[in-house]
Length: 265
Image 1 (tube, one colour):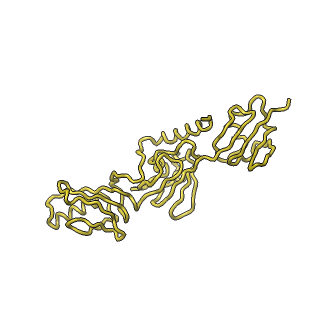
Image 2 (tube, rainbow, N blue to C red):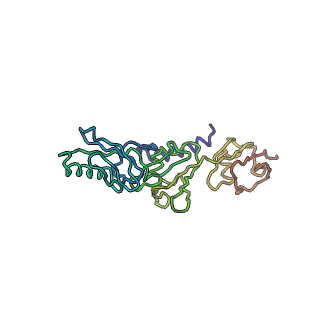
Image 3 (cartoon, rainbow, N blue to C red):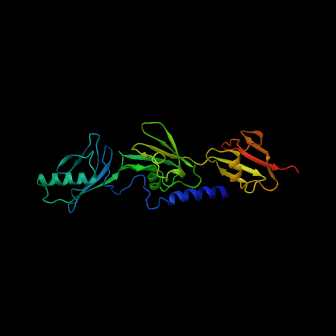
């Protein structure tokens, strides 16, 4: 693996390391998030301690209700798992079925309040949002970005324009750079776009395209010019065409091939 990929991998590892302690969330977690607010499509498992004949797995209907043994319809939408367990317990008690029922509610499938995380992350999928999560927290819950990913993340809100955020700035704490995500948002981390640099540089090879890429940055990633190299004799192959360049501000584009020639003594 070349030095560039190692460098970007180290940078992304550092970012994700600052978020260690978050447990990556699978697409359909079975553990209950007690603050989660139930909605249509969620699947819950309702149990009464010591009464296995009552235990039921059911889906919240579009009208917001679930159907349970003995007590029939119960309004679930807008309730947390704890709130629903108390509501079911009160119904069972007040209607004379059990004197002191111990009711538990587990969310088996989160369908109504989640964000979708796709692309170059460790565990892509659906992430339930039971509270206001920042973008960096969602990335941590899916295990962070993979090595070789781009240095930015795309956020596509359910209602609103698409936005891009630099991954390296997400841990700064500025709310403008680390926004709160909303249910229905889609997050996408692309694979890194690359360029190639060969010839009279110290570390030739394939490199990820940096932000605001130019020839100066590309040469730096390539380890700088060798003793025989000169920035006055550089060729860039782009879309099959060869360009002779010397301006270090020249823009570098995806899949560019940079060749640094020897200086003329």
